[in-house]
Image 1: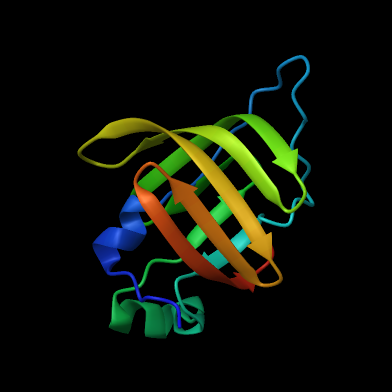
Image 2: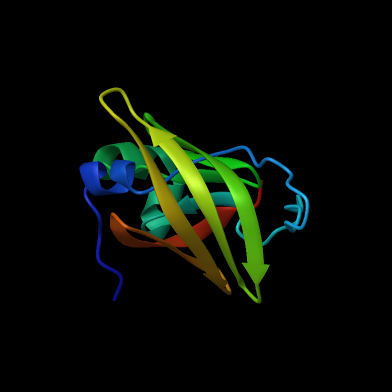
Length: 127
């Protein structure tokens, strides 16, 4: 069973986007399997249910992510199988931070891991 993150936990978990292209780095592809809209549960994929339950879906692009008022820009991306690692420059209304993020996709499940912890999401749709 997937733990149901609170609105604060979901907001602290990562979101969205921009990758700088460095020599020797793999360039992110728009068809990367992590790209899309992800919710902490399937109920979070319905805007009506998400609001009622306090869920924040994460919109992840090839260059960054956003969940609620938290956003991240990705850079220095590397792929290994079904996982991507990158540096993420993130911010919300109160703070800014940099994290080392790992996005792993297994079917319709995505795990976002960083120094701040890990969150598991289910795919809502593909961006």
